[in-house]
Image 1: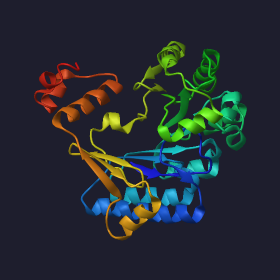
Image 2: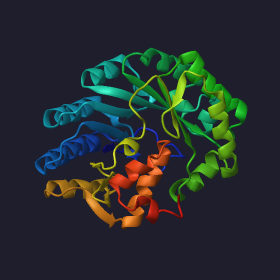
Image 3: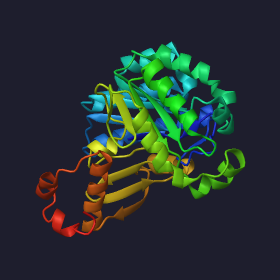
Image 4: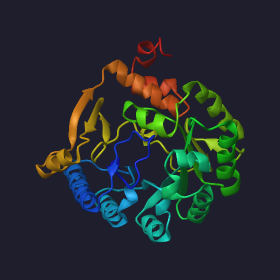
Length: 326
């Protein structure tokens, strides 16, 4: 996992690590990220899958392409997933990304309701729902998988608005993949969300989620709890299919050998760490044996199935240890 924290617009609902885009700062960051990728290679890591998230990884396409080229040169990469925003759905960006080996592009749409887009402060930057639809349609077919990232349970979102989102994406556009995230609230975003979007009612979440399932056309399958796809493509959540993952970049997380690692959220600290030949990790948390099994259980359930025989083979004593949870 590679994290690029820069965004041209800081959406009020987003609790991921992000900072306002400044070109000079972003170019310096990409250079540090590439140095950390080389350090990981020198430490013996090799990768078949790469997921680039943010932030908006495509804020500087030339820097991103150079970074992807480096990963290809150092590892036998088979699939690359990259997140982006609607403004970057332009042929001069999309085709070079495809040629660089990107197999899945995930676009942050969030909603196709103009009223909600205004509340999220995305309408002025990314345009109306009509414009978003046109851009998604133009991007269809370029990548193996085109994913639309959506949000449900927005404070002023009713079932009619949600139904319209599902209909437009799956019936009119026929997008390869749609991921519907429940709106998440963090302490860092609560005040701004309340001022711009309203109060979140979490008791509606289950009902709206079931409405999404009921509205999906038959040709869409449930790939994981939030991700729905037409045919088979690259899954949205890399942590479901991979028990271990290495995160590089400021604000990234790693899970290796039963230990969770967090990289520093300070860009200055991150740059200093890399310049001194250290990874960006600023904290680690060893998980107890029981918590490792719980993590395995939750990820498998999020991926919609748990093979108890496989779990027992991988983790002897799995069912006995987690008898209360099971």
